[in-house]
Every structure is written in structure tokens, then in C-alpha cells.
Image (cartoon, rainbow, N blue to C red; front, side, top):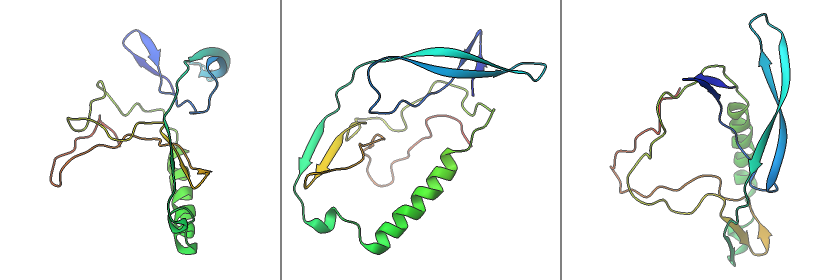
Length: 143
């Protein structure tokens, strides 16, 4: 969804880490006041980005999930997919986003790891370092 903020429309988009650099055309749908839906196209510029890759050799037990762990991972993936598939017309944030704790982040977003020659999913978040008991604040309002 897009949200009217001050004098312009804004949205948050996710871009696949493997998206090719350059211009990408994407459809944008508008629901007009009379209920009609109008389709337009938007051009999104994806800039080139190189993410670090680390190759690690570890015991096989750290690469292949056990049957119980695989079942848990599959269950959690379904639960996560259900959460991320929800779309709301409400804008849940109302201020600029902030860092939840001061200091440096750990492994960078997009960092790729290869375990025993097997590529794994790139790191899709940011690790934050804090001591036990450190207050960690929400980056913005939410639900």
C-alpha cells in the first residue's frame, strides 16, 4: 500500500538481493474515490551492490538439519509466510525510523555464507550487539 504523507505518496518496497541492477518496471494499482481500480507503471532503479561472501568448513551436523529441526524450520517458515502475506491499508509508522540501540551492527545485511560448499540464504537482517539487560527500543510505532 501507498500512504499520503505531507504532499506526496510513499511506500516501502522490498527488493530481492539477487535483483539485477538497473531500471525495473512494476505495476502500481490505485483505488479511486469512486471504487474503480486504475493501473499505472512505476520505474524502480536498483543500484549495483556487492555483498560479502564467507566460505566455511564445519562438521556436517551443522549443515544438515536433523528431522526434528527440519520439521520445526518448515513449520516456522509457514507461520512466517502467513504473517508476511498480510497487507493492511493502515500506515503503522508515524515518525522517521530509528536505531533500536546505539552502537555498531554485526553481520551485514546481504552477507552470504557457504557451508561445506553449500550456499545458504543470505543474511536478511541486521545483528545488534548488546549486553544482557540493555533496553532495546522499537524502531517505530507498529502493531
